[in-house]
Length: 374
Ligand SMILES: *[C@@H]1O[C@H](CO)[C@@H](O)[C@H](O)[C@H]1NC(C)=O
Ligand SMILES: *[C@@H]1O[C@H](CO)[C@@H](O)[C@H](O)[C@H]1NC(C)=O
Ligand SMILES: *[C@@H]1O[C@H](CO)[C@@H](O)[C@H](O)[C@H]1NC(C)=O
Ligand SMILES: *[C@@H]1O[C@H](CO)[C@@H](O)[C@H](O)[C@H]1NC(C)=O
Ligand SMILES: *[C@@H]1O[C@H](CO)[C@@H](O)[C@H](O)[C@H]1NC(C)=O
Image (cartoon, rainbow, N blue to C red; front, top):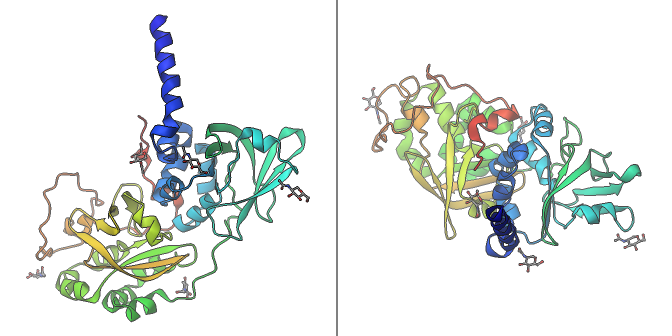
């Protein structure tokens, strides 16, 4: 009993100390304590929204549980469209239960991580409910409960459903980019990569499928791409497609977002069920490096960085291990100067070596075995 009490005191004490001693806004760590929000948490990480939350002082995160996430993901959206909807769930004002239930005018409007004019309307409904709606849309969700709060800085609340406007136009999208990605790359030092992309119809389609909802391209500069051509030419068509798609992410990531990111991201080549074709984003000061088991490349320039499209130049070609270890994708020992690392991890390529195209099914971006419970 005595011990019990001491433990409880210790827990209370450490909870009390938490805000001042650790980053109170590490949403990944906060949500990790609640298995019901694991899918939501995984998607915050996968779309690089978590670092955006760390950086803010005043924020409200409207989380939805795994069942609500599953309903939302059944709309088969691109990762970019998912990011646009989840951005609406991050309010740039502080709202805890008390404030929500006593809105001075019965209603409030909050800016969100989705760029203005997007905002979220909060309304006191009859019967003590609180409704949430994307600006100018009907109420999409209601307040369920408060999850955690650090008064006036961070509030995590649960709402009943995703703030989705409709499956066809899930979130207020940023103005479509007027830039043509391949033309921009050709004009800014990545003409060889752009030409290879145009020559692979399937890969080009994978990039274009994301050009409205959000796309980030890492294009190797011409010198790097030219010296890589002999290796590239030895790949099968599927191998070439996978390598090209390995250079894109299906959502918009700004350079400042990448600078505050450390961790794995999926690419257009990722066919979610397995954790394949991932890139590791690693920061060192202002340098952003993109690591793969075979190559570490550095961002050396920005071709374009305007939501929904970002294009960054790399000093090296990203080589997916999944391609170079697969006899069906890289038939000859085509790794050139690069040596294949020892097969430490189990090979993640499909057994038949075929590269299946991702086709936008949202649940496939995140592998199922990825939930961490400490
Ligand atoms: C946030 O917490 C997660 C999980 O505990 C940890 O892996 C990550 O490094 C933390 N991020 C920051 C910026 O502290
Ligand atoms: C809370 O926000 C204020 C500014 O609004 C900031 O000075 C303070 O450091 C924040 N506290 C925490 C624990 O993040
Ligand atoms: C409430 O409404 C009044 C009149 O429309 C406005 O002046 C005031 O700023 C509103 N208060 C809040 C907190 O929105
Ligand atoms: C985006 O892709 C579509 C095809 O899906 C294409 O018609 C359109 O021109 C592309 N937009 C840009 C800016 O490249
Ligand atoms: C390409 O394949 C050919 C034939 O299999 C081989 O002789 C050559 O060394 C390979 N080139 C590179 C750069 O690996």
